[in-house]
Length: 290
Image (cartoon, rainbow, N blue to C red):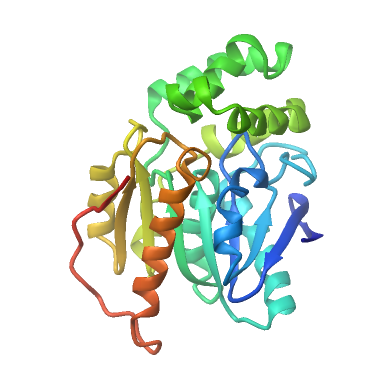
C-alpha cells in the first residue's frame, strides 16, 4: 500500500495505491471515504493497480474551502488522472465511481475522453436531485451545522445510504460510515452542497460519452431505479445496466461479492472486444446479481 497526495484546485487529494496491473481510479460516495471500497479491494487488486481517491472533505484529503460542483470535482480529477498516467505510463485509466464518484466519472469521460477507457458508475443518477430530496437536505443542513453528524442528522444519513438489514446487522459497515463522518466533521457540509445540492442534470454527459459505460444500480434506491438507468443506457453509444440486489447506495459495502461480479463482468465484456474499436450494440436485458 502506497499513499500520495495530488494538488488540485480543490486542495490536495489523498490517493491510496494498491495492486498491480492496468490502472483503475475509484472515487467514493458522499459521507464516506475511500475505505468504503476496502471490501472489494482484495479481489480487484489481484490483477489491477487501484488508485483509491479520498474526495475533498473526506478521509485524508483537504477540506473544501467553499462549495463547488460536479464539474469542479471533475477538473480536480483530471489532475489525479494526469498524475496516475505519469506513474503508470498508461494513457487512459478505468474509472469506478459510486454516486458522487460516478457523477465525477460521467463528467470526466464526457469532457476528457482521452483519459477514460471505460466507466463503472454505481448508484449515480444522471438526472438532477429531486425536489423532495433537495428540500430534506436543506432542512437537515442547519442541524448538521449545530449538532454535527449526530441524532436526527446521523439517522437520516444512515437511512439514505444503507438498507435496514445493514443498519441492524453490519457493525463494520456502520463503523466505516461513522469514522468517515467523524474525520470530516462539519467540513462535510460543503461536500453535501457540492455533490448533492449542486448536482445538475448529467444527461448531456451521457450523450457525449463514447467509452463503454456500466450503470450499476441497486434494487433499493428509489431515486435511481434499474429501469431508469436502463432507459438512459439505451440512448448512449455503448452502455449497459447491471442490478445488484440487497443494497441501497453503497453496494461495495453492502454486497461486495455481487459488486465485484458486476464490475468484472463488465470488464470482461469490454476485454473481449477488438481493441481498435468499440462497436455499437443493442441495449441488453438487466442481469440481477444476487
